Length: 387
Image 1: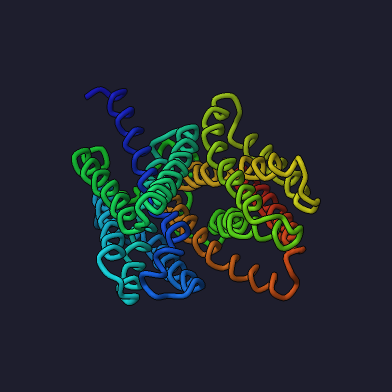
Image 2: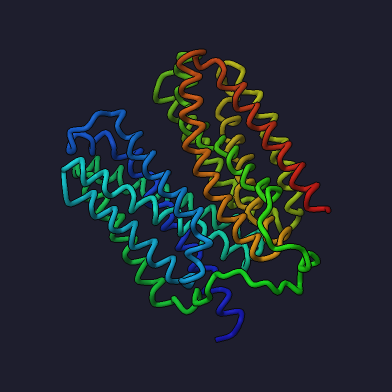
């Protein structure tokens, strides 16, 4: 097989894996109103499930570097997908809430480990243009699962059929990866020889300064905060009707997905640094529009906020392999994913408590503050890269 054919196959396989990553992520959000009736659970109890899932995702991503010593990339991907499939099947086969709580660790472990694996693998083997496209295909996976859930809930009033269909898609993708597992046969163990890197002679011991990139991802929870609270902010603060507010959130996610694909094209004409700085500037500008009452411009502004965030996650994930020796880069990417999940867990809880005390009028100020922190961290990371 020629190198060109191998690379093309590898790219397509990575696209499919990223779709599989997104497939389970909209299940609880979209299906919970129907699921909770089957399980006789309260509306707010979904937060317990998502918390458990995020904690197990965090732990599996943080432990990835130890797992990688014993398993190949293909084995990690296959075992992670198997965990997710087990979790999905457990959701379907029982109406016992205990079983539902048992399935969440499987989902969390599977999602955390595979997220780190494919991010590190793609960052090592693919250019930044394809890295952005990969994260765009994650959005395709989320959109597909939401569409599947909408179809089965509206046509058959069955969330079990919807999750069963998603599980079937995951099984088909798992079989495909198994057939082409030779493309991921390498063991993701960091090597000490980095002749192509100018910093190959530096200490390969993980140090406190290496945490600056994971800290960026901790504050990147701004994406989750926007997705969770944007609609409620417009309803509570400006008395916008629920349907219109939900449409604003949809536009935000659409902007994020479209932005990932646009970034893939922009990397052909602009440097990664230019793209990141220009989008941070756009994010700062658009964050200010959140202070204003909704008007004709609001649809454009929330879409552009999503678009502005789009390149930050994938392009910043490329930096560890450019900045550090392989052992450090592998660990940093593992921590990136873990800290991002930790931020998604912490900030919604923190901001939810703040909104109860101070009401939703502070939402734009919090978004602007997080944007300023992200911008400052990017400046610090780029200064560290120059050294």
